[in-house]
Image (cartoon, rainbow, N blue to C red; front, side):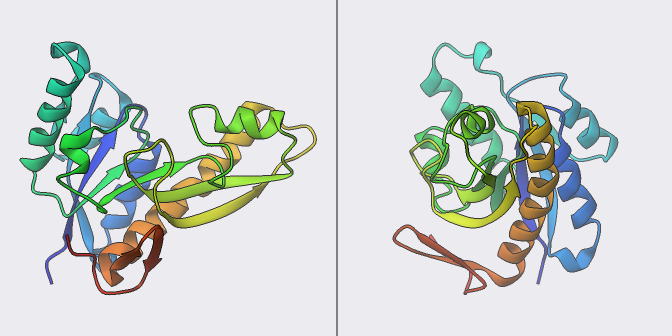
Length: 208
């Protein structure tokens, strides 16, 4: 069977993307990164992709007159690489209907908390402020909400008494990279199913 084609969406340094690149170097992983798409130019992730000779594209919101036009351009750009699965690896934009409707149940994202606890942009800070003793990271399928999609996998990280937002986030990110790689690998090799809001790995591959 041909390797599954991944399009990775990025906005920053590319640490999760790099973990995926390292993983797909082994043919047994079952996928290859077909392209890297960013909403920002001159970010570290693009430099890593270019060094690895992976096609890249930049679709900046500021180059379009409104959000809908950008959403449509992003969808067209992603579609040009014919992906089987989209992976948001530090992509800092909400995906609109043109993308969500074209790849339903095939967009993976990660979040630095154990959802449904602490959704949103400040999950690590909120966990500390809330007095959480355990937090972690979640890999999920993207839906129309903010961090509300079906959960694929989670990993726990203990909160230490002397943790700062930076120290806790650093430990979460170290776990997050492995969780994303493991989850995407299971999806491309073994498939997944959706039953309402319940996502299950290791079942026949999801079909639209």
